[in-house]
Length: 306
Image 1 (tube, one colour):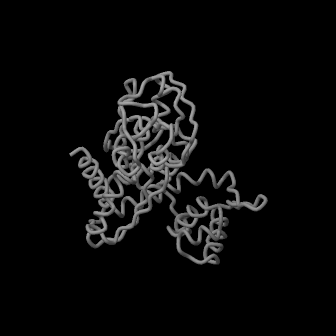
Image 2: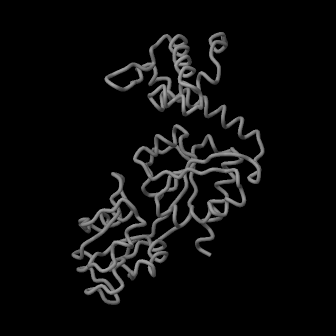
Image 3: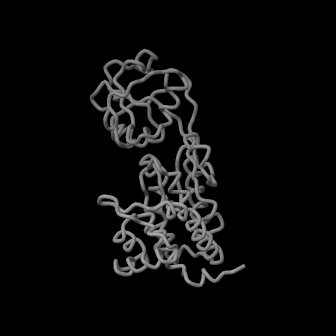
């Protein structure tokens, strides 16, 4: 096999290509890989000569990838991931001394119930590790496929079938009704009529479906949202002194019941439990640091049921 073309390209040039395609900006790409803007401009010029294509062209105020660049994104990303996973899998990992930054994506509910306590423990166990936790975004499939995420934590039934990722279930939770502790109409239980007619507050922070939405649709219950919140965690605090009702995660409701002055009640019909799971790129499967983090997450999730 003739490998002569490979001698004219180095790994840093491929890293520059990946950054340029992700950021669509020379300045942002330079910051992404910690080089100066002139160096990134030079890399773009070399890439254009190597591939005999402009790769990025200006349209209006933006840089847009050419057809050739779009064809190259996935194979170059896969090649970089293979190199990275090969290098990392050959190394040992010591959480007490090693440096690493992990990027996770999870709801604020998962951050409060699971990740918050765990990350506090890891400050002592692994003082040099850094964590970025992003809110759930509609493009999570693309972010995992491009290895822009180390872990996604998300309800398993909401993950699309086409997601190319490994997974492990973490913990289950119930959906329960919540109302003000002194709700003027709701007694020791909530009726189906009350569930259907009381003003309803629910999470509406993204275009993605929620488990409560899926459950109600399955039960053929049309429950319009009167107040949509950008956060699961804020829902309990919307109920005090009002006629509002919420359908929320039981663990979240119990966490804030006293502070928010709310009562939790069983729904007037059977609602299946939900399961939060973690997802990661198969390319990270043998990375010792990634394996360690997954094991710590699994242990923390198991402790929720103890």
